[in-house]
Image 1 (tube, helix red, strand yellow):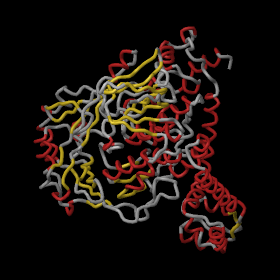
Image 2 (image 1 turned 120 degrees about the vertical axis):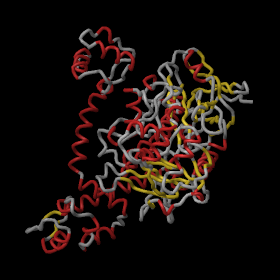
Image 3 (image 1 turned 60 degrees about the vertical axis):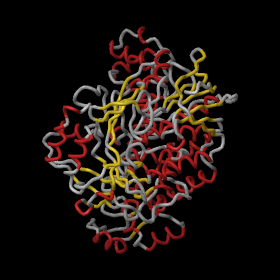
Image 4 (image 1 turned 90 degrees about the vertical axis):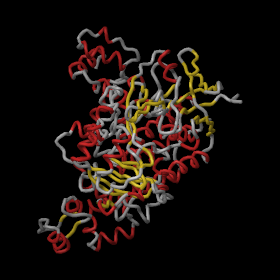
Length: 623
């Protein structure tokens, strides 16, 4: 039946698996995607949205590298918002509400149109090894399928256990069975595993809600889009979300169920996401707060199903019903399904290389929640990188690894590999020390040239990036070289409460003033003529404005990154024996032996390794 030896088998069809399969196939590898349900490919198991703080930057990076998440989001979005627009551009983060059903459908259709990609619906419950190499997988039907590489993207399905109140049952998500066998096979060959938990809120009937008691939250007046592709379009019409609040009465009702809550009675022992806590966790940890926000999010253009964001819970269903009815606008609520918590197996990611290949078993890759992350975007990014690297490995090529100053994806993977995680890892802008370099607006300039070298994007797409860079450079050059007279600019400066000038000044210096934006500059005839003659669009204008206003910060971060990257070039031999280096602290020796960093720079980021330990290593290596 499966006489072919595949180049890459992807186990699991969630966000990580879908990106992994697409990337591997687009890299020319003969790829098989195995999933329990072809109807649920790239299912939005939790909230119907992509992007957000730092996550939006990741989606842009995935798109710049030739992944599909941005394109699918644009095709199925029902609302778009650029978050943090009042702050500096390093903090701007795109977010889109999606039509849940159309999102999964669009993903499946795009994957079906991807060459080199086969599909098979079954459950993988065993792995095939040949010594310390992966050789393939075994399915629930007993079918063995051989492969040169295997990527496991099992999400919350590995020995998944769902909790609602005092009821527990196996499952990977509502209505779908758990996956067994993979964890057991991995533990047998020496992998360390653990348990994590996550949760999801109730889904309700929008027809039963009173929106007049809530605060409307429309999308942006001029919505943007995620994908840099010319064929991707911004929304013309949008659906609003709404916001309401819990109350002390709601909190009191929720507390009535604490003794039956698996979170408080000891049935759930694993750790949940710190930054997306359940409603019972919120009222327990923040007992002095009188209310918490509830975001009411439509699940699509036409469906009446609504996602109750901010009300994740595993409390008994009678408590969920009683409490939610006391929230303004929810007095007559009808439930589609109750919220629940889910526990699942993960594998501490310090067992991986930066390529996401496991250190213990060659050609075996992990991506997504199996590595201890939470969120569609984090999973999709890992899937993309695992897919690229599995394909490169079968082609006998060096792995593709992004550094911390090159992408949020680089920060994400380096954090996981170097520091590990004992709670579900979520990306934030604060995790990136070079966030002024890693903005959402320049992901294509940073990453598309790399993707083009890999063969992940077309020449046409590369040409568009080069045009964007060239036009931005041209605009900056124009501002550096063009002077403006006091009589031309002073009325504009005065109108914007900025100090007037008394002699001719270069426009770059004027443009750098925080009180001015480029809309003001275009009131000058010479600027407007330049913009029209050179066909400067809004994207180029924004890119130029950011460069001008933040040039000092950008240069400072670039210099810091270059200093750190010098240590990236100091390699540590594989299987280096740290026990021989007696001057290292005991903690450093233990951590370095466990993580086995590949460079001095990576070693410096390991918790417990001090600057003096790094100095010792540099001396020991003759540096």
